[in-house]
Length: 127
Image (cartoon, rainbow, N blue to C red; front, side, top):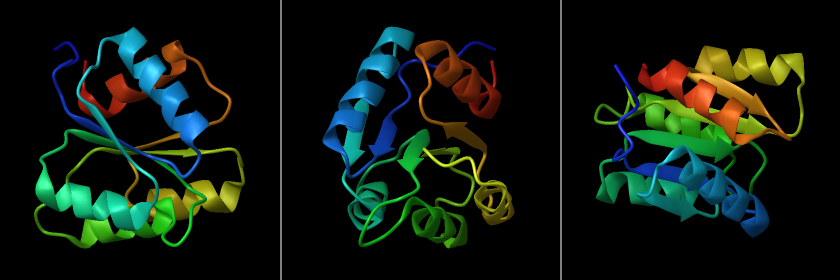
C-alpha cells in the first residue's frame, strides 16, 4: 500500500519557521493538503472541524503542549485512532517514553530531512 498523498495533515508548531520547513518537506514528499496551528488549543479546535489523516506536532508550545494535545486526541472518541507524530528538539528518554505511553505513533528529533519524515509517515500510515 502506498502513501495516500491526498491525506489532510495538520502541522502544529508555535514557531512559524518550523511550520514552513515542515510544509516544504511535506510538499517535497507530495502532500498538498496541509493546515497548521500555532499550539495545541488551536490544533484541537481544527481537529474538531476537519477530518485529518495525520497530526505532526511539536512538543514544546504554550499554552497547550504537543504532549497535552496528544493526550486530548487519545481521550477523544472520534480522534483516538488518529496517527500522531511528535517532533522535538530534545531526545530525552523520559519524553519519548511519556509520548509512547500517551499513544504517540512515532517520534522525530530535530533536525531531520524529507527522507526521515517520509519514513516516519510511512511507518504510521502504512506503505
